[in-house]
Image (cartoon, rainbow, N blue to C red; front, side, top):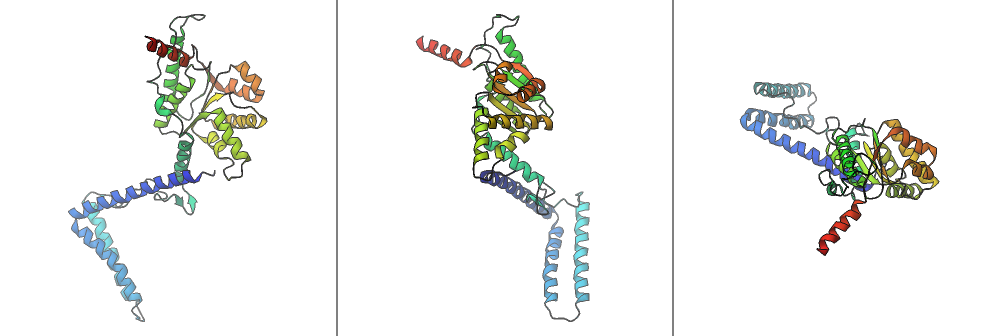
Length: 334
């Protein structure tokens, strides 16, 4: 998958930082060990000297250098054996003074046999997720800041009040985020405007990201605009956003149904939903529409997947933003 230059640069910088950290820690470990075992340091210098000695022999002009080369080799091996003995005497493994790279396969270079290492691919993917989520206010929406004060505590048509129902909804979201795995179910948040769907979606995103998973959050209009722009643009990143939406550990698609629906966006939405279902990648979708409203916007292929592969979470109450505005105006008047 092609990534932007910024994503590559971010991933490369992070990988190089990991490599430099491993080298610094190894140098410190080596200095400490040699301070206690000065013989080891002298042997290290002697081994380095053998390379110089070998070069001198090779350039000496002697007709037969076999014995000289053999003597240098035997001396080198003897010093290495003695170093190994010193490590054993100190209770250290043979590789104790070798750098402990974050990735043993590529030694934090990002490449193995000329091919991109999985560790670098993961860093690229993480950086790409962060780039997509850059404008997402994750820090503003947490479970702790989700207040029940704006939901009526009187039951109307149900035996439960909106506040009681939303307390259950919040617990459902908390449990989902706390126990999230790539095998978690898909969720469909439904309900009117201003009932907290976006807030709890962001709260889930923040907690799942803190567990180390790759999460992509965004509104349907923004995502489909990006996908359409990339598809019809002249750049190389023709499948950039679409690829990330299909492959991330958790996709949170907010405000489904508010995008401008075309044949292209419908095809892209089906591709995303179907691919993630087949790959068993969890998705959370929030929408202001009930299933009947979604059926008026999308074809049966999409609505059947939403109905059959998503657990519905119904949000109830009054528009929190209006309630909050009324309360603030009331305080101002007083």
